Image 1 (cartoon, helix red, strand yellow):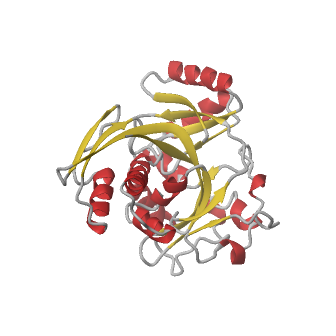
Image 2 (spheres, helix red, strand yellow):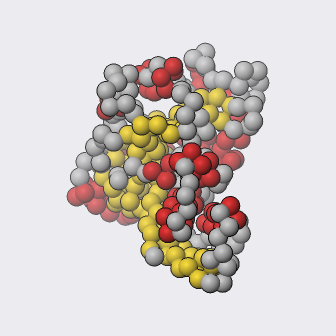
Image 3 (cartoon, helix red, strand yellow):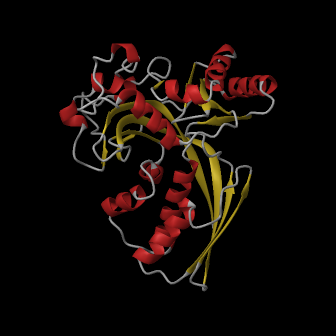
Length: 318
């Protein structure tokens, strides 16, 4: 059984506070894109897990792989005695801010639950996915979601234009934990309340306060893991998100210190005709928003000519 496991980009990413448990609260818009890994599942009578990995961006086929961990957890939790063999083809680079490993874990969870007739509530499903990473719950649903807390509380968004994307990976692997650490050292080291406020005039972190400005906290921060946007609610009009004006990522200034190439790639995408450009997640991948597949192909060729050793894709929002 073959399954496609799509990557994501972040159209908006703002770190809002550091929690007492060491994690960070954030506000982000996840957008699924059609760059994907492929997972081929086989069920056997061996009662063990076999994982094989190939592709352009190979990772370890061992017990540290999120796919292996997800399979193992499900087998143990639901007492599954079937064997599971997975062939994973990695087309999504790791250390790129695209969520490839998390997407693979989510695909594994969904596939096993559907094909092994496992009964599980949505709340339990989210909790299981969250145990493998804060963005894994998003990949259970895909499309476009606005996320809060550590990224696991989701608002599903349905009304949006599906732009073309030019995605660039400069072959620089960035560890998300290191970027969070550097961010904390810069902005939270001496704070008693662990919270960024508008007093941070010099930080440029509040250049865009898009989400807080538009959606009241008493509505936005419900104590729910996942909830749909009410169809008729004047406070939750997400159609106002504008990719030309509202895209923002306050990890950029930290990641650019590690990979200065990010700045140049963003500028090149704009120079070649992208509507806007942004780093995804903690980097190092950068994407440009484009109005047509023809223009995306043109920009892709221009980027490839300028940066001979970079990976470049002309892809789509899902």
